[in-house]
Image (cartoon, rainbow, N blue to C red; front, side, top):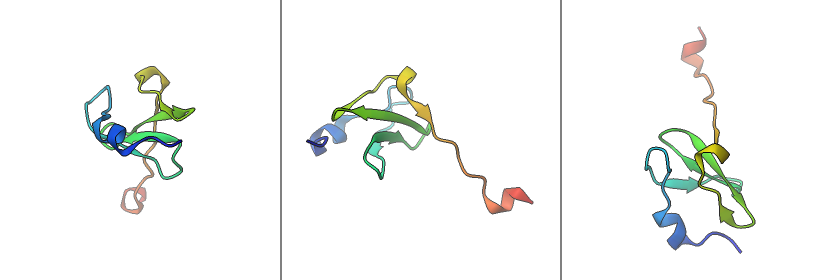
Length: 65
């Protein structure tokens, strides 16, 4: 059983209140603003800041020079 669209439509990041989106592998919910990823365990989103991880941004090619 996956997370329903209705639930995804109302979930927001508890830190910055930005709506979250399902990650491509479907194992987490990502906030595009603060780059936190909240895990999904047993089809239940764990929306606790302490349980989230921060996704590291890849350096752009222009910034590597």
